[in-house]
Image (cartoon, helix red, strand yellow):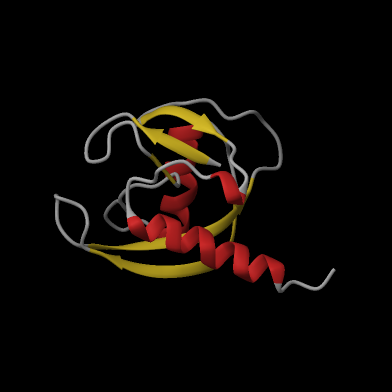
Length: 117
């Protein structure tokens, strides 16, 4: 699931649901909050997929923490900073707003393929 960015940087492009951690907020809780704000889905946060340093944001460099998430129920809808929400097959991803998001998706798919059936 990806969200289409409503604002710059990357307006109109797609990315993982994301945002900034509030002061004194745990990163995993920020991931759940940002996903809810952008998609309306209350997700359960799973394992950390990876930590990615980025320098392709005009607001400055930062660190992206990506978690696996699970939505027990509900239908996503665009909210907050998202213009749209969409489900995409791994081989049919749209243009992403930031390079670390594609790397995180690749890492998540690689780890999923290693999970025994």
